[in-house]
Image (cartoon, rainbow, N blue to C red):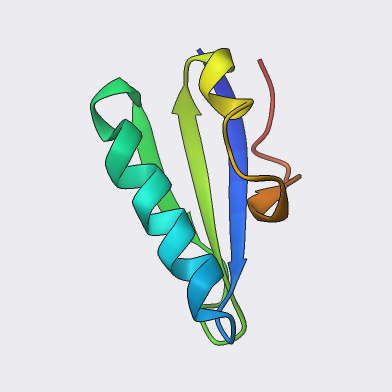
Length: 70
């Protein structure tokens, strides 16, 4: 299992929708999804799942946090 992050800007409704769609599409394959971030300007998700899924996160939603790692 790998740990990776995803982030969407709250003022970009499409980014938030794309993030939610990605999570919904892969939910059964993920070990955990925790929402973090302030919520007023960004929404951040800390995700644990197969490394190959990290490579499918849309580029504009990728983020690096202290959570990330293999």
